[in-house]
Picture 1: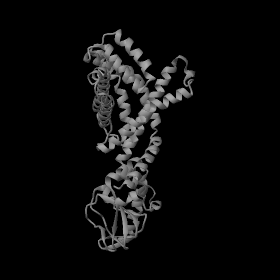
Picture 2: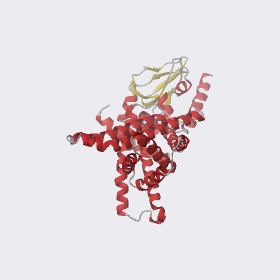
Picture 3: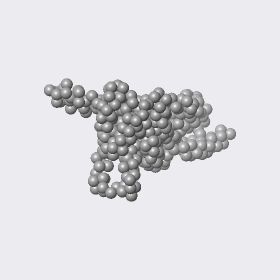
Picture 4: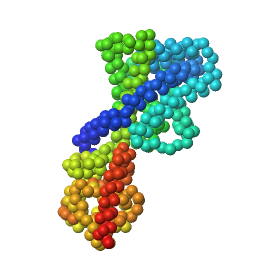
Length: 402
C-alpha cells in the first residue's frame, strides 16, 4: 500500500469512526460505563490498597503510590476517592469474603464495556451466563493487576531514582517508558478479553494509540474548562466534586469508546471501501484509488465465473458488461451498477450460471463473504434489497427457461 493510500485509508477510518460513534450512541454508552465506574472506583482502589499493602509491606506506601496513579488518571477524582479509601482502609480489617465482595462489585463495569464493544463491532456472541461472568472476572483481574503494577511502580520509583541518581537519562526513561508499556499491555489484554473478534496487532495498536493520545488530552482540556469557568458544576452545591468526578470519568469513557470505534473501523477497512457498492449500486461507479485493489479486469468473452464451480465471493460491475448464461442459454446481460454471484456466496453452493465478459475492459469489484457479512451487520436493511433483486432475477430467469 502506497503512502497516499495509507493517508486515504486513515482519513476514511477517522471519518467513519466519527459517524459510527454517533450512530452507535457511544455517548450514552459512556454515561452507562461512567455510572458503573462510579460504583466500582472505591472497591477497585480498596482492592489495590489491600493487595499492594501486603506487597510493599506498608499501606501508607501503597496509598502514596495509588494517590499518584489516580492523580495522573484524574486529578479531580484523587481528593474525593482517596479520602474515602483512606478512611475505609484504616478502620476496617478486610477478610477474604470482603475482598470477594469488592471484586464482584467491579464486574458490572466490565460487563457494560463488553456490551458496548459488541455493539461497536456489530457482533454479539451467544455465551452461557457463567462464561460471560468468567470473562468479566478475568477482565477485572487484568484491571486490578494493572493498577497494582502502576501503584508499585510509583511506590518504588523514589528507590529506583536513588539507585540511578547518577544516570538522570535512565531515570527519565524509566518514569516514561514503564507506565506506557504497562498501559499498552493492559489495553491489549483488556481488548482481547472484551472484544468479540480476533484482532491483529495493527488493529488494537491503532485503537490503543488513539485512546492513549486522547486520554492524555482529557486532563489538560478539563483543567482548561475549569480555569475558564471556575463555577462549572457550582449548581450541585456540596456535591460539586462528585459531579466533576463523574463528568471526568464520562469524558474518559467517551474517549475509550471512540478509540474502540477506530479499532473496529481499521478491522473493517476493506468493508468500508466496498459498502457503497452494495448500499448505493447506481451511484458508486466513480473511480476510487482505495477500490483498485478489489478490481479485476476481463477481456471480451473471458469467463468470470463458471456454472457449477464453487463460489466464495460476489461481483459488482464497474464498467463494461457481463453476459449471464445457464446450460448454454443466454439469460441476460448485466451492466455497470449490477451485481451477481451473491446467491452462491451466501448459500455456499455451486454457481447457478456462467458469467462472461461481454465487452473489452470489463471491470468488476470482488466482494468476499467476510466483507459482505461486515457490511450486512451494520446495514441489515440490505437483506431486503438483495432479496427483492434476487426474486426479480429468479422470475425473469424462470420465464426465459420455460
